[in-house]
Length: 82
Image (cartoon, rainbow, N blue to C red; front, side):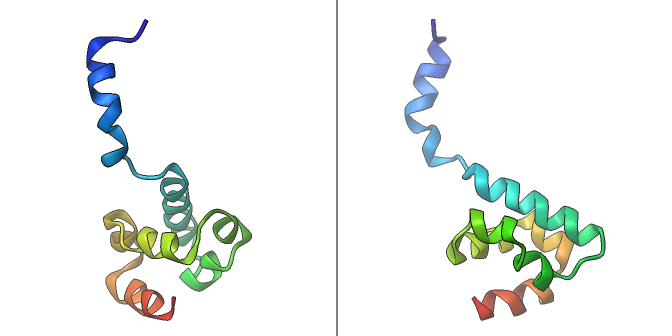
């Protein structure tokens, strides 16, 4: 049986939830960048292309954790190309 707080929260949870695919792709981008790969190479990976539309990639690149990991200037250059 569901708990009362879960029932009350669930009808509006979608308003605040980030798509899980975008979350996973963001983690992938940060992890691969820390391994020394360029952002261009990472965004060309089949993993990213199969999971995100260009609009979703734009949102991933705007996430604070991705911006912090990659750098404002690198992300800005790629966002303008999409």
